[in-house]
Image (cartoon, rainbow, N blue to C red; front, side, top):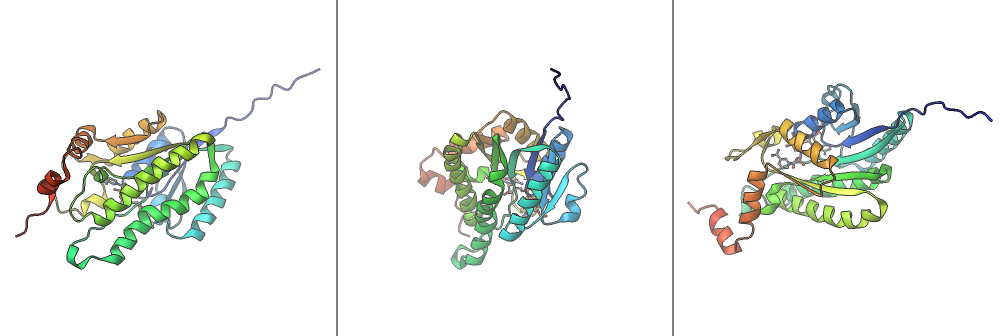
Length: 255
Ligand SMILES: NC(=O)c1ccc[n+]([C@@H]2O[C@H](COP(=O)([O-])OP(=O)(O)OC[C@H]3O[C@@H](n4cnc5c(N)ncnc54)[C@H](OP(=O)(O)O)[C@@H]3O)[C@@H](O)[C@H]2O)c1
């Protein structure tokens, strides 16, 4: 009896990255392409996504459920066509707006930030999680801002604290399915998002440095990825102080 020894084509590893048109997501997309992954680069700005050589652009608004559903359908077809497995989903897209006047609390701003940073993550999980391969990994973008309360960060900090809990709970529930969950808590990274800040940003790193750390630590299956370590360990230590002391240190002085 003759046996066929025809070589099966190798299965490609794929990654989906939201917020890939700018900043950390853009650097991540380039990093994954350089490391041989089939990269699905997502964002609203298709023209900017198309500049990422070697990546597949998937343009959609994470706040639009229908657009996400359509993107997931396209993704599923492209994975089959490319004989690829979706190894990682990095939900990185997000926005940051500050509450400038606490006595005129901007409820619409609060809603916008929670919508984009948390609720939209739920929409993305609904449609992309079923496509993740067993032994795959989902990474949710949070922030080291969650280690301490910061002035004006009521909306941004609350949204990222919700992401932390979402990640911890999802990690428990996805264990049985063989899918890992990482939460990413960067310090200050130089991107268009932080270029708008008018305050000091100690130990700021580049988006390429951030992408390098995220890539390496996701590969090893780290649950909590935080960097730069010197900065994040200082925040973690300070978070152990009594809240009255934290308040004294961080509350803006009344002029
Ligand atoms: N930079 C930092 O220091 C820092 C620190 C901690 C955490 N983070 C987090 O890291 C993530 C990336 O931030 P970044 O600094 O790289 O910011 P960025 O350069 O402003 O990039 C934000 C990305 O999110 C996408 N995005 C925003 N709203 C979207 C929407 N409704 N639909 C689809 N895509 C949307 C944008 O794409 P389009 O404009 O094309 O839609 C863009 O690609 C955010 O979640 C941020 O909170 C950043």
